[in-house]
Length: 336
Image 1 (cartoon, rainbow, N blue to C red):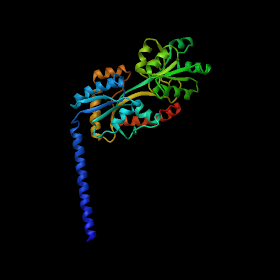
Image 2: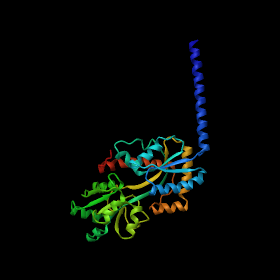
Image 3: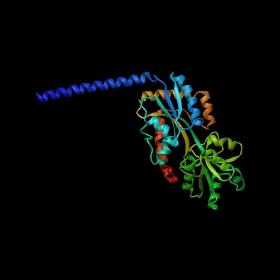
Image 4: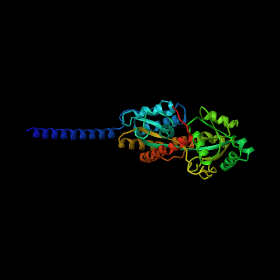
């Protein structure tokens, strides 16, 4: 009798569980079909007015039309982008919380910060890569002219013949410029002193005044200085050259193997968000990125990125996360 009752209870439990699963699956399908049914929050984890903020707001305007729903852009800056990113990492996985993630947040900060409140892979679902821009190695024009430095090899030869005389600027410890400088030192054996500043602008001012002799800077911010002849570009830091500097080789083409440090950013939502919702977001943002106004803005930032799938972006993020572990270790940079 007890055995029979136990079997009955197990059968009832199995039926209830299957019913709950079916109900849960139906609810998930309904959530995807009706998405979006309320405003979407889009977090920019950096200060207002910057390039990521500008493009996020422009994309938000276009996507509102695509999805027929309001996109609210809000800035939550701090801790190198970690504060704003954590808001989305801890949100419900329903596609109503987005963040403009970047190479710093997803690939560099996890190795740079001793304590980080989220898992950059598990806690986020990649939606789409928005922009990928190379950094560029630039030198002070007077320094270059006085020492006949016209190529990367010229700079390396000068460094080897003048130990201790080179200083390079960056926007801060652990920045892309710092990592690129230390990677170049590790790959070539040259000696150069890192001089960190509180941002890219003061770093560039030190370069222009010849307090420092070279730096790795984001292409978008350095391109006007290059075009005006205020600095000389020696190489770009990505594996492929950029059409914005067609006569400037990559670091690898100029002689340093295994050198690939770029600046990228893209849209993420909370980890575990249903694929159907991610695909809707990817399609909407893909269309927005093809809008002439958005294309023009991206081009002013030095980007010629083409929209891709969410899976392509996910694969890219994982590879970047792995790659920067070695680069950060080489730099020796840490932030408590």
